[in-house]
Length: 176
Picture (cartoon, rainbow, N blue to C red):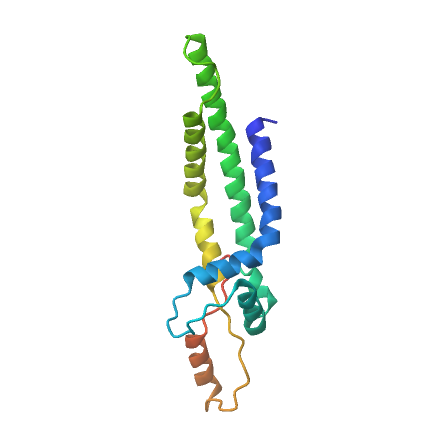
């Protein structure tokens, strides 16, 4: 097995573990960053307060909304990054050795070359995995307010469903 493949798989595995541990915090963070309701109170809720609010209003599962595509995204992102990092690093090392044979340099990869390798790997990663992260963000920011039993129900159930569907968007899944 090549070093690039080993590094890609190790990066993907590490990313999955980190994602599972920190996902509720990421969901709240994404919601805080995308909140644009000016009618809400001036005082911003802290992370723990907002997590409790999400659980109270929408249920525990909303803290993990979008987890499946996020795990796919993390696996792909980490795997792609570390795979291409190793490939680009190997090329940089071979170029450094060629320069050493010509009497230029000591055969090691310099700081600038290392930065270029990391930047190229990051660019490939973003280009290949961005659509996955768009799905994740949409699923994290989708709110699902629980329907309360209102004493002032509308006259017809069909009209009530129409009003509720206009107020409450359907639940997103990865396929949507």
